[in-house]
Each structure stands twice: as C-alpha cells, then as structure tokens.
Amino acid sequence: MIKGLAITPPILGRISIGKVVEKNGKRLPEKDDQFTITTQVQNKDGWIPHPYDEALRKTQDNHKIRAIPIRLLFNEPDLNLRAEYCLFDRQNGRPLYTGNGETCRRYTASGMAPLPCPSPDACEVAKAGCKPYGRLNVRIAEQEDDLGTFIFRTTGFNSIRTLAARLSYYQAVSGNLLACLPLALRLRAKSTIMSHRTPIYYADIGVREGQTLAQAIADAKELHSQRLATGYEQAALDAAGYQGLSNGAFEDSDEDISEIVEEFYPATGESSIDGNVDVAAVKTKPTLKDKLDRKTASFATAPS
Image 1 (cartoon, rainbow, N blue to C red):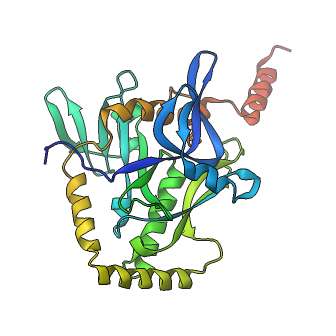
Image 2: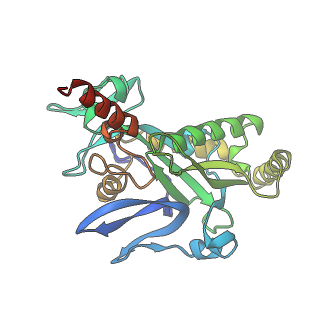
C-alpha cells in the first residue's frame, strides 16, 4: 500500500445542502432547504444529478428531498463520520492544518509536524479560517454496490455534533449493529441570533418513517444473522477501514480540495454551502441596539 495515501470508502456520489452559483462574475456558495444527490461528474451547470435524486423527489412533499433512506458501512461511528478542525490555503487549496482539539498535523518549514491543537478559539493559526470539517459516508438504501458510498461534507457545527451523537447512540442501543440498522438521513432547521433568526439547515439521522426504534433494531438483528450465515465479516471490514484511513495525513484528494474550499471555506463574511456564517463578520455587523446606543451617545455629547 502506498504510504501517505489515505484509503477512504469508495464514493459513488455526493449529498449536499446547497450548491455553488455564479453571481456578478464570482462563484459563491448558496445554501438550500433540501438535500441534493449528485454524481461525481460536473458540466457547465454544475454537478450532474444522480438518478436517486429524481427518484426520491417523486416520493416527497413539494419534490424536495428532506429524508434519504440510508444504511451505514461500518459499525464504528468514527469510521462513518470523520470530523476534525481543518484549515485550507484559499489561494492554492493546500490543506495546512488538521486537528482534533488536542493534537494536530500542521505544515511547517521543515514539513509535516505533530503539534498541540488548542482548538480554534485559542489558536493563532486558526484565526485564518480554521473550522470543523466533517465527512459522512452512507449507503443509500437499495443501491446495488454494497461497499460504495455517497459522501456528505459539512463544516456545520450543528450537523457534526448531531450526527456524532446519533451514530454513537444508535451503536449503543443496537448492541453494536450500527451497520445493519435501517436509518434515514434527515434535514432539520433552526434559527439563531447569529443567523439573524433566519432558518439554517443541518443534517440528522433517525429511524425511517413508519418505523419505531424497536422495529429498526429487530430488523438489524435479522440482517446481522443473515450476514453471519453468508460469512460477511463486519469486524474485518471495520479493521480495514481504520487501516486505510490511518495510512495518510489528509483524507481529501488534490482534485477535490479546490471544490471543498470553494463550497465550505469561502472568503471572510460569506456563508458556506451548509449555511455557516463567518463569526467575525456577524460580530462586527451592528445591531439595532448598537445603532440606538450610538445615537443616544451622540445626543448626550452634542453641544447645547
């Protein structure tokens, strides 16, 4: 195996909550209120929709994909969802830094170096645009390729935190049968002061519509028994997953990085494709209270 090359789950297509559009001669991320499933091929109009995209739209309200039936490839949550702090060079797309809040791998003058990772709030390097970056690999139900996956990328804290919790909980309650559970990737909405109370959308995972958790666990046990009978080695698959991911310093390939930077690491002050807003830009935007306070202060200091 080539050293330094991360071996990741095979990818059949992409799942996103938004797209990149051209406005005033600039290519900018645009968030959405639905999932889009695409192939890995682009044309002049962007990513080409996958056949699953049209099929799912026909079954959902307003032809908007708000839930995708999925299964997971691995039993271990952190193989299905890999999340870390990441910083890319926006000029050349080169990954500069990845960390987990404790340790990091960072490019230095002498090459790749392991260093402490104090998290973005306490890191000088992070001020250049470091933020959480997650990659979730899922199998869309009924797909023919048993080991192929669709990848959902996000820098949204809500998505990463929710997905990590769900995967951990479902692994626990199912008795380590996470890869056998019939699940659904769902879109949820919330609003915050930082989003100016407009909805922001994030990904969640739950049991499929019409099923209870008890029914999903019963189905998982039945599928697990069938797999054992055919000689399917889930533990060996998880071990191969860990070995492949640990073989390289960075997971994303060079040809993917420019697209990732464009979608998820836009220029300061712009929203990313998954609805994240640059925190510094939000903090510097004056609120109505700020404007009133300044107005009051100007009257108080004005000469009588």
